[in-house]
Length: 117
Length: 118
Image (cartoon, rainbow over all chains, first blue to last red; front, side):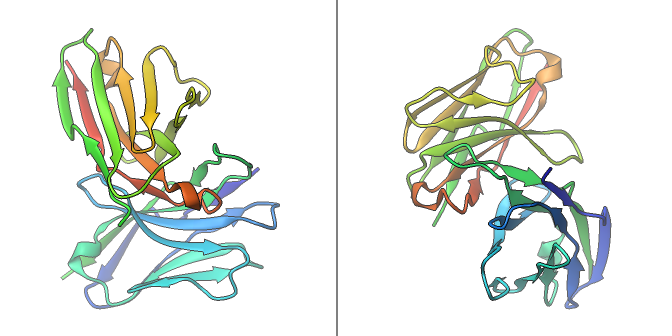
């Protein structure tokens, strides 16, 4: 069965430093997609970054990069130069195996990141 | 781009009343929208998948008569919590997927609705 595992319930990082949030996944599919979302205390879910299983390069979006290691089935999120506004919950997700419109996302339990000034 | 508006952001109602939550994609068309429920300090729980012009697909254990979903246009889906009770109090959040991005399934989320039933 497909599964996402985030083993870090909480993380601390000093402002301006880089931080890595771990995500491992389990799937037997060859084609899949991996996502990271950010949820501040306000509640909205903000899409950060997407990595397709066939993408040759690691995805990057500004200060966010996804360290995709296919053989290890890991898709860690790296945030460079942390800012106070990065304090939030971070969720890793995977596209469910399914064709058609009803394909869903499988979610991890999240990692709470606190950025210290 | 990819803005999803969800309204209201917060609602307090009496037990037995119905509450309607709207989810709009403001700058893109969304054939498919998703409704989630989130309990404190937990991950998202998918309630139903809403496709424009057809009946919603509910997840196992979600009462379709309790949580009515309508997706009447490519930019609007609504969730109505009928005869709400205190146990329905929760954070409800919707997402929309761009029609042309169905393969990747990138979902863009609204800001959520915090429902409190007294």
